Image (cartoon, rainbow, N blue to C red):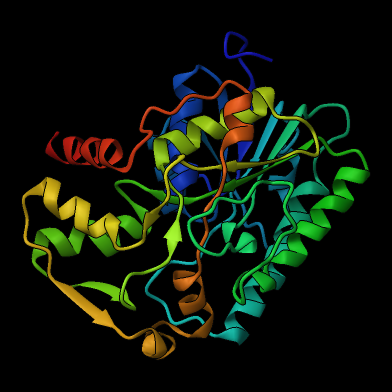
Length: 313
């Protein structure tokens, strides 16, 4: 199916940072979009993005499952909101919840109706070491945080074997005017508050602008191979602190930093989340580019300039 043919799409997490941008991108391509929303407020956000809200909760079976029989299904389950303290017990509970959410969705997919399921996986399941990018074929080495989410990938493999047309997408660090980036970078920089940083330099990671991430997910629905895994990230890795340093420079604002020693990070955000924020995650995008995908914001500076321009509108 190409972008010239209108598709129906069901999007979970449709009121979230990535899911909301995905709904907008699908609607812009004239596809009909149903977005799962767990509250009236979330439903209003789905409507503003141009989608049709479906009230329901991934954690609970319900009538929302009757709406899953669409051409494309995009599974963008909720992510942890940075700023919370997340220890090992909380991370384990989130991993268990992820298994239930995945099962409730995938068990509802109608055989023969849905052409492609794009499953958005946690990049923390693919920890790397240093700036050398890893490929999708490398043995997954989950971080301590990612180990709680790795069982979900094993469960997905079972659905693939059973015949579900699943494409797994592993986004890098998604940034844009929302989500963690607005909370951790945009608001502190413009208000003069200190930006929280851990350790001396921060981990290596692969960024991806939220608009490019949404476009890539649609591209995978159109061209991704069933059972395939694809990293969704820019080519050049950066240090985590470069997000704030570059943004403040382009915004012509002074950057104030609250730098916490790495050893104390677990006391601030919890052991599991501290591990996530300190683990390298450098991903190769060769497979995605091999499908013909091209980035609008291939560098961090290009993406940050887009964000600043949107803030001025």
